[in-house]
Amino acid sequence: MIEDIRREIRRALAKAVQTAFQISKEEEDIPVEIQTNPKFGEFSSSICFELARATGKSQKEVADALLLKFEKPEIVEKVEILEARGMHYLDFFLDFPVFGTSVIKDVLSSKDNYGKSDRYKGEKLLLEHSSINPTGPINVGRVRNSLIGDALARLSKAVGWGVETHFYVDDMGRQVATIAWGIENKVAENYSLSFDERGEPKLEKAEGPPKNELVSRYQKYAEKTDFKVFFTYVPTTKLIEEQGLDAEIDELAERCEEGDKESIEKLKKVVDDVLTGQKETLERLGINFDSFDLESDFVLDGSAQKAISDLKKLPQSLTLDSGAHAVDLSEFGLARRGGGTVFQRPNGTSVYIVRDTAYHRWKLGQADRNVIVLGEDHKVEFKELKTLLKLLGDLKSDELLEVAHYAFVGVEGRSLSTRKGVIVSVDELMDEGIEKAEEEVRKRNEELDDEKVAEIARQVAIGAIKYHMLKVQAMKPFTFSWDEALDFEGDAAPYVQYAHARACSILRKGGIPEDGPIPERIVFTNESEKNLTRLISHFPSIVLTVAETRRPHMLPEYAYRLATLFTEFYHSSPVLTAESEDIKNSRIAMVKATKQTLRNCLALLGIESPERM
Image 1: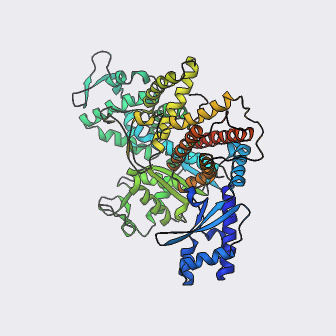
Image 2: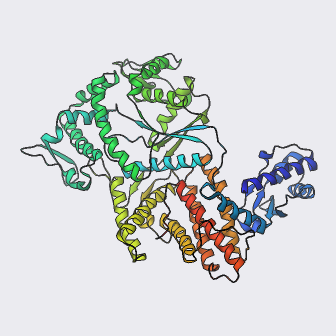
Image 3: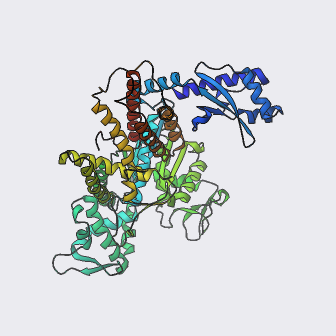
C-alpha cells in the first residue's frame, strides 16, 4: 500500500522533472522518503538539492518549478515546500480519510501476510548461523548468533527469498578431539573435579565413585546430553594441561584431518551427543535448521584436499621456513606474522581455514546469495576467507557472500568462564525467566489456571530474551538484565505483548468476531488515531528495509513505537463506548489492524503474541 503510493509520487515527480528541466530520471532514482513526523506530511523528497546542482538554479527555484509542473496523484491532498538548514524539501500530504481507510483495509484483508512482499521471489538465500562449538550447552554469550540468524531468516522469507538455514558442525576441531580422548580414557570416571576459592579447577584421582562439582552445580540439566559432554570437557582439559598430553590430542586430530574414518567416528559420537542437547534448546526457542553440515564431510569427499591444491597454485602462495604452506595476503591489508595465512602444516595436515574454504566453495554453488552470522572475534578470519575465495575465483562479487557480525552478551551479576566451569546456559536463562514471568502473570491474572499461567509465562519469558537481545544493534556489546527484559512498562517484549493482549481484550469484551465486516469508510476523529494508522502503514516498508540491511534491531524499535501509540490511542479514543456507531466500528477496525500488525511484527522476531496477560 505505502510502497504503491511512494511509486505514484516518484512517477509524478519524474514527469515533473522532465517537463520543468528536460532531465530524464528513472523513477527509482527519485528520492522519496516516508515521513516520520506527521507535521510534515506522509512523504518527503530532497530532489531539489540534486537538481539545483545539476541546473545551477537555487533550491527554491527548483522547488517552485517542480510544484508548477507536478501532477498530483489522486491520493495526494497537497504538496508544500519546507526549508530547513539551507535545504528545500517537498512534503506530500495525503488525503487521510482515503489513505487511512486503505491502510486499515489492507491490514485486515492481508492478515498474517501484512508486511510481506515478493520483492525477492525466485531467488535463493543460504543463511548460516549458530554453528556453535560442540563442547557443551549453548551459553548466553553465543545465543545472540542464533537469535539474529533466526530473525534474518524469517525476515528474508517475508520479502520473498527462498531461504535455507544451515548449521556448520565443527566435528573435527581440537576441542572435540579433547572430549573424545577424555571419553575414551574415562577421565570423568577416574577423576574427581572440584574448584578452589579462586574458581580454578582441581583434579584428584578418584578413590571410589568420582565426584564432579559441575554435576552438582548444574544438577537440573545433568541428564541433557550436551551437559554430560561439558562435564567431561572441563576435567579432560585440566588433565591434559597438568600432564602435558597435548601430543595425544594433536595425534587424534591429525588422524581425523587425514581422513581416518575410525577417528572421525569417535569425534562424531561426541558431536551427536552435543547436537542432540543443543537442538532441544534451540527448539525451545522456536529455532530449526534445514541442514546440519559436517566439517568432516569436506575432508572425506576430497574438497579440503582440492582447496589445498588450488591454494598452492595462487601467486600469493609460499612455503614458510617451518615447511608450512601459507598465502601472503598483505597486499589486501591482511598481513600475518610469520609471512602469511597458514593453510597447511609442515606435517601435511590442513588447518581450519582450508575446511572453511571448501565449505564456502560448496555453499556458493547452492544459492544466489549467502549470508553468515559470526561473532566479532571472527572479523579477520572472515576477511581472509573472503579474500581467498576471490583469489580462487569462486566469489565473483562481494554481495554474494555477506556477513552479519555481532558482539557478545554478558549476564548481570555473573562472571563467566568455561575453563572454570562457570556458564549461564540458555536452558538456565529460559527456566529462570519462566519462573519470574509466572509471578508477574499470576499477579495480573488471578483467575487463570496453572496450565494457562505456565503457557503465558513461557511465551513472555522466551519473548523477553529474544527481544532484549535483538533490540540492541548487533555490534554493540551489552549485559543481559532480567529487570530490563521483563519490563511490562518499557521497551521490552512484555510491554509489546501486553499491547497485543489488550487489543484482544477489547475485542473479546465487545464480542467482536475476528472476521467481522470491514467498514467501507474509516472515520478519523483525532490525531492519536491518525498517528497509529500512519505507523501501521509503515510496517511493510520497515520489513523490507530490515531484511535488506540485515539490521534486525530496527524491528523491536518499530514494535515498541507501535505499542506506545496504541496505548495513547486506547487512553484517548474509547472504542466500545464511542459516541457513534460509525466511530465505534472505525476504532474496532483500528484495534484489529494494530493487533494484526503487532502479531506479524513479533512473529518476524520469533516471538509469540499471547491473547491474555
